[in-house]
Amino acid sequence: MTLRWRRVSLFSRSHELFTGTGVAARLDGPSTLFGRVSTAEGFGGKWEFQQRGVFGNTVEIREAGHHMPFAVLRVNPWRSTSVLELPKGERWTLRYRFWKGIMEAEDKGGPILACSSVLSLADSAVVTFPADVSKIERVPWIPMLLFMLLSGHRRSAAAG
Image (spheres, rainbow, N blue to C red):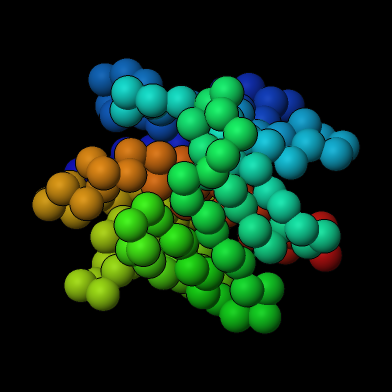
């Protein structure tokens, strides 16, 4: 299954995940100056992704309105991989493939989900779901997190 991320309007930091028949999820980016919190809503929940640290090397994932994170992403700025620490000690690897513009999530069993950039006026990125979505059902916020990271990589590459 393939879904598409689209920007809500030209100057907005909000994106919507389209299924072809409607909107499945929405990601509202942080404010332009000093914002560090993105909010995601869809798939039956609402979450906040808060970047911590000087360079935003840590992203805490929590339910909207709560202060305690239930998952933490540790970004290694010197490598293309990051570690997502889920509840009960489970760990996933998030891998950014710079030259291909792809952000992937994988566990010990292999790839779980991929979000890739597209050159299009309408779409910002494409999310490709595997046939077996049982792992994604446990972490329904993962497509929003992957897109937030992918768009952050694109912004930093354009700035610098």
